[in-house]
Image 1 (tube, rainbow, N blue to C red):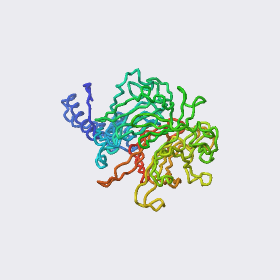
Image 2 (tube, helix red, strand yellow):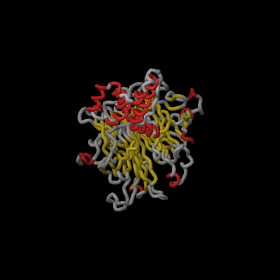
Image 3 (cartoon, rainbow, N blue to C red):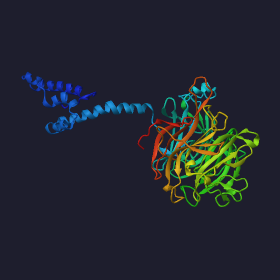
Image 4 (spheres, helix red, strand yellow):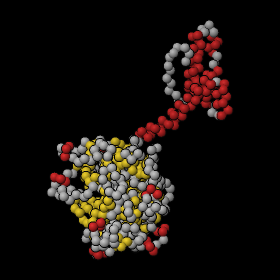
Length: 550
């Protein structure tokens, strides 16, 4: 200001303060340039007068126009003051709040989400093995790994989210250093799994996650291929994680390893991870004649890390997509084949059901449940198959869709999101007279079958419906959600966990479904990065974190 060529930096909290400063500067300038005219130093400069008394009061169209035409320089100054004040009052507090919440993972889909229930906010594992009340004092930690970003580039991101503190944090990572780097698979970078999507993962225990397969990047290159590597992620103190590669070539069970695949389904049942189906493709080929739908069922011993092949519906006489008798409605529920089971597919889901088995005198039996999915040649499915892990047989739980009205069952779909809950609560029952809720599968969203062009998923509709499937009655019920809900999406990262009940000292559990990100449109690049939690008991959604612009 004036002729000195100096620079004044002002911390602006409002226009009056700057106007007062300009008044003082004008008086000083006048006394320096015209010391003989003391009265001039007391006269207010017209622009300064506008600034000191007018800026806060000129936020009308007429005043702005008057200022623009009569005092253009003052108009510019007032405009800058207004922008700075708005930034100070509105934008900066908002940005600071977001900074305190941490930076969310990149907008993506098809990544891994796993909840470590026993970790304290700082990553301490001491609460993991405690009693329910001790574990309730820890902050459940959601772990997000990898995925497919907006431009179909696989990303390697490791983030964790503290559900009670509601803060995103980066995860200090230690790669596998126990083996020679030359003995590690091609799908890794510095002892850490390479970026991937459409993998499966389960918790082996409260602090260790097992992740298998997916479409993975070949090292640090941009080339992609289906993989069949198994990695263990262990949570350590201070929020640190450590990766370890399971080398089956060095074990006695090296021949029993599943083929490379993506878009398969898995769930933990007892001390095993059960896994079914998927799709295997050669390098850099996402779809095409060289890809193959898989119908094999495997289980992985989560203690001794051994694979065992349990069955293969694609090799059963009369089964699979090339033969057998279809039930019509389910679009993939094949009957009449010895052993039965779901047809080969990908994009389906797997979860664990605990149901009383009448053939065992009502003994509680664990099932590996497979729902829906898609096959390139056969289209979309909405059938339900349950593998009895006691007698190792498939059971067809598909309702009789042919004799039901459309509103009583969900449409065919793939890349949806599910949770499975045991019977809970005493506030009424499901009509069975036992005073408890029956065990159920919870279904949200996915990519639905198109009304035309049966096998062209590019014409599909993205869904955000919510359904319950009663394992006992074998019936669907659509849930009418009140309040906010996530936008329609598919291929979100999702997991479930049991939150401690609100009453202090209670050992009861509160089931939740958590989803992150996903794709909101079939023409790709509709990815989001918001975070939602579903209270399964009340069927209400809570928006934990809003989406940034992706």
